[in-house]
Image 1 (cartoon, rainbow over the protein chains, first blue to last red):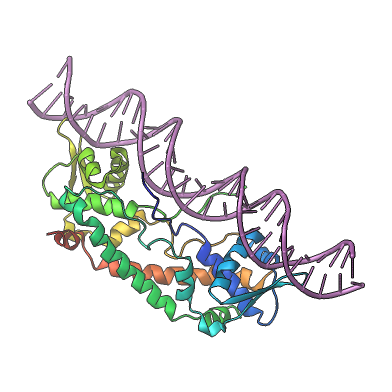
Image 2 (image 1 turned 180 degrees about the vertical axis):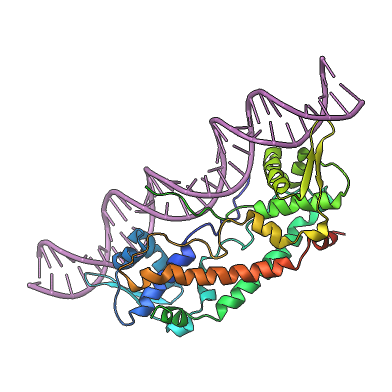
Length: 144
Length: 144
DNA sequence: GTAAAATGTAATAATATTTGTTACAGTTAA
DNA sequence: TTAACTGTAACAAATATTATTACATTTTAC
């Protein structure tokens, strides 16, 4: 039997989490509810709360429960880079996935995944290196 | 009603197509069958023929039908870059997808997709620029 | 104290996407 | 004329993503 090992970046999580953080950074010192944020992204509030859970685990966000609850940024927006955000949501490689089970009897099949790994890690480095230079703060300032 | 606009890179197509082309380049002048290639990747031969169909459309590959049929590279392996291959199979952005339907009433929701587009096109440029410098020929030579 | 409006989270359902498979028509060489 | 291919449509299965429901818990305001 075979475990599934490689979920992918075929999703909107980077866009969603960046959206959430951008709103929080843009409303410093104000508690925003998951419903309010969800209304801006136009997705289900439960999805927003799930992502906010991870952001709290990372220590970037705090929540307050109860009637006037909500979420607020805890880390300065200058201290969060887009590479940090990418790292949080990334679960696949830029160039997609490898084929598992390539044939070890074949000269190509035997080594292809090692060669691919070289490409994957280099492209990963390029993307992360670029995103590392952009802070959440700088990103949000573009909106004004 | 809503058309679906944005399929994704949550797949093994780059790995698969590169594997196919690597085998063809590694067996210059020999007709390889889809079954043979599929046996190296360990996927269904029909999937291989589907990709080979696209490679023929691009003019990189020719096929021969009938009993001793198969596929052969038509373009010199030095004339194909990994960026070409990436361009052929790429159908999503490196950083994933945007949320459609963001709220135009919200300062963030209104502009987020334009800002994301900037990130997407820059990362795309980084990745393609790197892959453009690697030819299929150079890639295959690494295997020996 | 009780109602209203939040968070937190599990469980499940609905969609979307990718991959695999079956089937068969057409082609070519021996 | 059979065997072994390509080409492709149609369908099925597996996997991934997103949405939804439900409800326990928390907190404020009245």
